[in-house]
Length: 375
Image 1 (tube, rainbow, N blue to C red):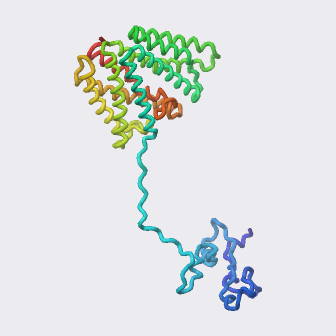
Image 2 (cartoon, helix red, strand yellow; image 1 turned 120 degrees about the horizontal axis):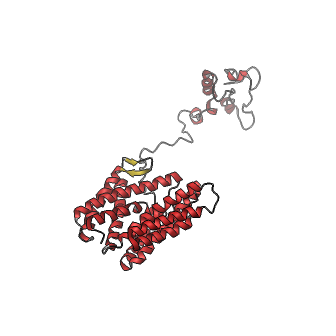
Image 3 (spheres, one colour; image 1 turned 45 degrees about the horizontal axis):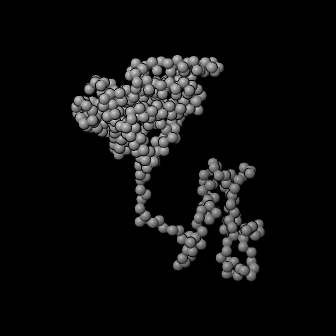
C-alpha cells in the first residue's frame, strides 16, 4: 500500500463512464441486457483503499458515503422504486415477547442424593446407637479412619505433605476405643502414643520435609480422632445414647437452619474470604433453630435436664458448628478444593460431614457434664 491510498479517492468513475474509457466492472451489453436495462444499470463504484483504523476521518466518511452497498446493507432501500415492495424486508422486533425470567437459586448440590444419603446414614447411626453401643463405637472408629485417609490424601496431592497414615489410622481407632473404655484419661494416653508413633514412623524416610510431615500428622491426630473421642465418652453415661442423639440432632438442626434461612433471606456475608456462601442471616437461623431444638431435647430426652439449659446448649452448638464449618472451609480453600472426597453423593466426603460435628463434640460433652453430671 502506498501513501496515496490513505487520502481522498479520485472523484472520476463514481457514477458514470470517464474520459479514460469504460469503467471496469460495468455490465456488458448483449442479448441479456436490452437498451432500457443498459440505461438503468450503473457501473460498480470505485472503492478507495482506506485503512481499517486511523487515517483521515473525513476521507473515511466520504468513502463510506459514496461506496454505498459495499459498506452498508442499503441494497433494498437504494434499489426500491416508489410503489415497489422490498423482496426481503427486515423483520420487525416482537414487542409482545416477554422479558427473560431471572435464574432460580440453586443449592449447588444434588439435593435428592444428599437427602437419600443422609437418611441412610441416620438410620445406620440410630440403629447402632440404640441396639448395641459397642457397634456405634465401631461406626465412630470407621468414620475416623476414612476421614484421616481423605485428609492425608488431599494434603499429599495438593501440598506434597506426607502425613503418615498407618500410625494415624491405628492410633485414631485406638483413641476412640480408649475414650469409651477408659474415659478422658484413656483418650489422652492414646493421643500421646499416637503422636509418638507418627514421629517414629516418619523417621524411616529421608529427612527432607520431616518437620512439615510430622506437624501435619499431629494436627490430623488431634483434629479427627481426638475430637471424635468425646462422642464415645458421651456414650458411657446411663443415658448415653440419648446424649449422643441430642448432640447429633442439634448439630444437624443448626446446619439445616443456617442453610434454609441463609438460602432464603441471606444478603450479608458472614466470612466472604473463607466461605462466600455463609451469611449473617444464616447464622441467626442456625442459632434460632438450635436453641429451640436444644430446649426440647434437654426437657424430654436428657435425664434431669431443663429447657433453659437446652437454650444455652443450642446456642453453644450453633457457635461451635459454625466455627467448625468455617475451619474446614479454610482448610479446603488453602488446598484449593471444594470437597475433601467423593464417597458420599450429594455431600462430598466423610470429612465434609464431620466438619461441624468434630468441634461440637467436646462442647456438648462438657456442657452436659456441667448441667446433669457425667453419670
